[in-house]
Length: 223
Image (cartoon, rainbow, N blue to C red; front, side):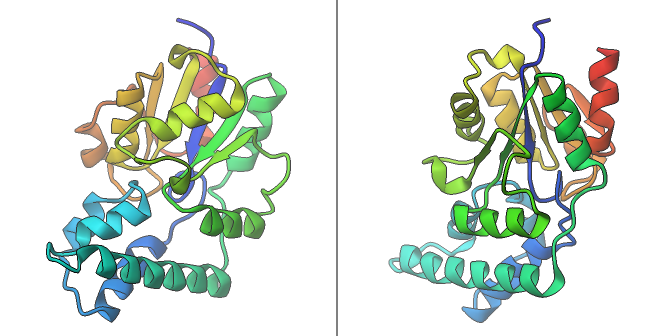
């Protein structure tokens, strides 16, 4: 096995406590625009590009793109309002894991289905803006989000990582795991701190399941 040179972490639910902010923002935005949606559908699209997720939740019709744009604007409004009023908390130990990996010469990247503006809001609230990771890749940096592998490939490009066999990817959703599988990363790891439970993650391709990212250094040492 080649040594790991890059570890890519998802944001909400993986390194940042979600507290159901994302599904609540989806539900509120859809309700504002008089669109009914089964909560299971919202759960199914967790981990995807948020703009694409909104589009997928809009019923087909001639005004679908226009309605999707309006709902997405409302989604961002509700989500930003939540983060500004309730604050943002990291998953326990996440920043320490970043620091430990980088001290060992392993590059660290964050990737997310959020757009750049929402991501910057989160990073600023966490005081993660400068120097804590080597790259941050957002949903609007690629043409297609998860389950496609492009967020991972963009993180590799941004950090100068040449081989997927030297990459570990960690996320809390089925789509995170499918993106890791489609990228053919060496370690494709699900964490149980976010959107999807063990039963759902076990049904997706993975190499390991961890309770949280805080366990990753121990796994790295074992392997």
